[in-house]
Image 1 (tube, rainbow, N blue to C red):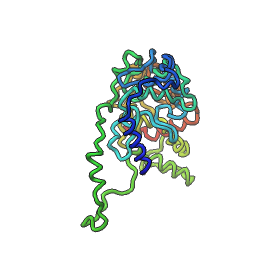
Image 2 (image 1 turned 30 degrees about the vertical axis):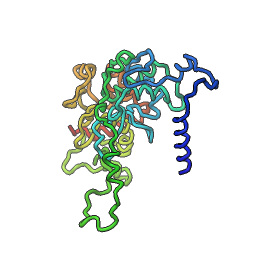
Image 3 (image 1 turned 135 degrees about the vertical axis):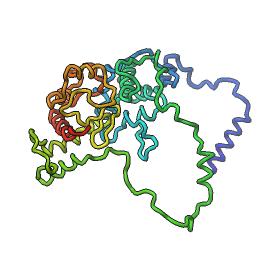
Image 4 (image 1 turned 180 degrees about the vertical axis):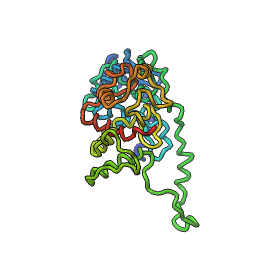
Length: 347
């Protein structure tokens, strides 16, 4: 406690002493260019932004090159790196997903963080236009802008983040502090004790039964059993090991697409029934004009078409909103297609 008394005494003496009339003669005034070099932060209203601009497509290429190895192709994250996209509506869950789209209140925080600290291990290597483009792409990944959006200093402040209005002043001093500073109860605190919840992790993608059965069959070396009375399929059932591998590879898709019982459209359409179906088949999903045009032109998701689309989506449907550069490994694409085939009869 003596340290704090000494600090308080020093503060009191400084406050009571006479003002310093003359400069101390230490150092020198910072030069304007030095101040400009240090003053690089960006305010929520856009003050401090550099001149520049960047579009979503350019941002995708930069993101794939500089960011995807940690944050995933869709912003879904790899390993324990931060998730950047998705999570909308999850903040009230037991395990909320705090991303740029679901949580961050200001776009300036995104721009400033990328500017100051990214890419990891090579900070400050991006140009101002690069940062605008990557920021635009991150907005697109979170369904805040369309794929033709161009972010610039002029329109930056017009972008409203989805969670901007949900923040409020810290009121813990008046709400929580009184509760946790009273004398704690140590015995006979409740008349009865009842279990209100059990240890379980909620808000995760449920494991579908088809993939589980395939994995169990692969482990035991037995073929997966077809439902009783079902006629033999014209084509051979997919290899259980390939299906199990596809479930793992499909993790790169789950940020936008869902499959299995009760799967609904999200930022991407549900992929139940996509195998063998016409393009743009999911009811209620707003497909891009390019995908609708491809569907009208007769595009059907055969294994060959799926493989080509997964490899490089924009080569198959130029103008698709799907923000994915492509699945590079042929074996991963084959596994994902086998996995999707197990949901062919689901809609």
